[in-house]
Image (cartoon, rainbow, N blue to C red):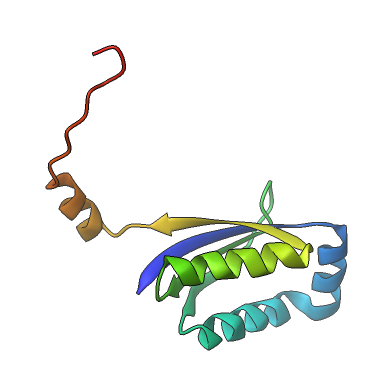
Length: 106
């Protein structure tokens, strides 16, 4: 399965929901959503700063990750961004790929 970093920022209505449900309640809801899609939560943390939540997840593919992003962002209470994560082995494989590239002006 592929891994993704999901960062989320709650708006005022989303924070009200979080206050009602609690952090563990939201984590459980995310775990269920991902399990229903054949995925799982690897780690789930709340944070201070620009983003309120950081979640590392496993999902079967990019289409599933896109579906999660579309559904969550459509709800309008939390804005998420999703980043594809690469393992060290993935980067090893990428370094062995032959890429023909010309730099701008080169």
